[in-house]
Image (cartoon, rainbow, N blue to C red):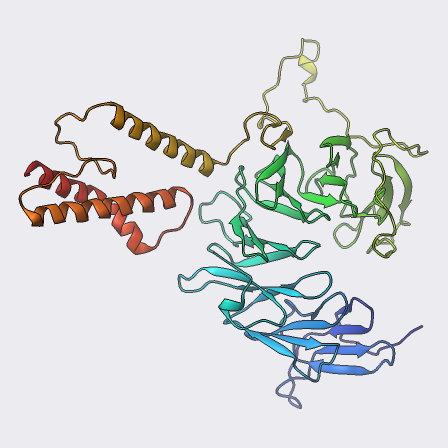
Length: 513
């Protein structure tokens, strides 16, 4: 036994990365003896069992301080500031980042210099935004490595890649105002420490179920869209690399070595797992783990564990250890009346298990495999003696497709990208047609930089025509932005509504010349 702490009201605890400090949290309460309440966040030195610091943390959200992996930096959110401490000295504030209404943050993994992503929710028509900073340079907007603003965000989830070179931000709203989804709306944003930012374009509408970085930090997988969900791997330019098609899935898990990806459907789905070789983009196996509430990779990258745990499910608790080829190597069920709360692999130092060649033949096992069986549509007994007819599916399954240019022909583009491409092609065709055909005498109004400017003897009329064309050109730009998905301001929308009126004024001036 290392230490014992008498904390009857503690409900949450966490260890620092190097196991030097234990953090405990209990609900914040007030009493007549203590109107301001007692500090409810406590930090304990595990070697001496002494309390290092007691702090106030009223909200359970972001209750735990966040350490860098070497414990040289620790960050916690306090009101509108992020407080930074160094070398576990919590009596001295080393640095702070002040941002109005900052509500969440994420500290980067890996070695120094540490970076932090800070999120500020939008208010009063202003957008939400995430900014990246490198410690200790925290002096305002100019010190930010990257900045990304966006609308439609009640909360965010921020995920750094392993190399701390980029972060993915999943922005979510509680309610979908269009009524298309019970789960609200989600968008995915990309920020890199070199200043690059992007909105990740997802071809299928619907929720974003899971986002997972590859351990190589060069690509990430997104599971998204109304069921059956799509799963796509993107590179750091946010271009799709491989599309796994559609299927019953809501989670993605990379092996620690990054050579295998498991796409799984747990929770309200049947527990189907698709095991993929992500170098050859070839499916290895397709086992099924019904009622699983937990999944995790063994550090060796060869085995996985699935478990049914309480309180998510209180019956049928137990766990299975699998080989990634689909073989069940070990199975354990709890005794009747007992419950299983958690399953966790023993941790090992990084690099303990090198990557091995991928097998496609099922590993030998006395428990066999649980490959998903092929299912047939239900047929009433009165029709079973008749020849089977093709059944109509609610959803046509999309097959996997390599999205790299030049590999499988044309790449699938998002709806917005296709719309913009059609507009560019139409404009290009119109310009070529205008150059090839002589312009006849007509009272049609055209707004084009290539059209020769008509001049009149009245300088005021020429000036009015020039101003009208300038306004119409600006409106065309606003319409292009609106088509690409950008949310326009109220005054910009009013300008677009005036387009017909401006065209009539321009036509009247040109006819009167």
